[in-house]
Image (cartoon, rainbow, N blue to C red):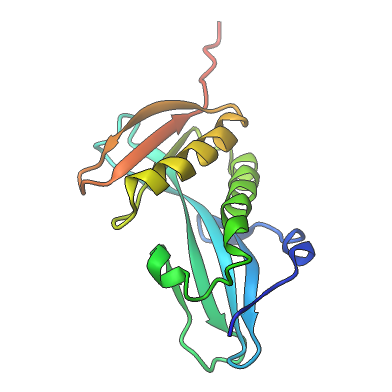
Length: 170
């Protein structure tokens, strides 16, 4: 059974780096029987896609990580709500989007990308995606970014591009 990790222990985590990827992994639950930890992981990394006007952008996403402290279980990540819900205690579920918002703010301030790309992964309902999008967009806008484009990508997923205003020397 997965139990919540005390909320006061979720605040003192540093941004980590793995190559060009920057991320925050915030533990939210644990299982003493299986020695597993459940974390909310938010990431940002540079990428390129010629179908996007600027070509170069930083993609942001979040997922749920489940890993064993003693190697007794194979670690995995998921962006599928129906899978993640099995590992997140009900009392913790309402705090997940707040953790993502805080993590996105910290990552944007740390990396300061020119263009941010976000996408709804397949299987997400548009209604739930819209609620999350509104919250995450407000966080990114509060750091000086503006919506530049939205639509469906070449894989048919709903996406958003946000850009930091460019200042023309003059």
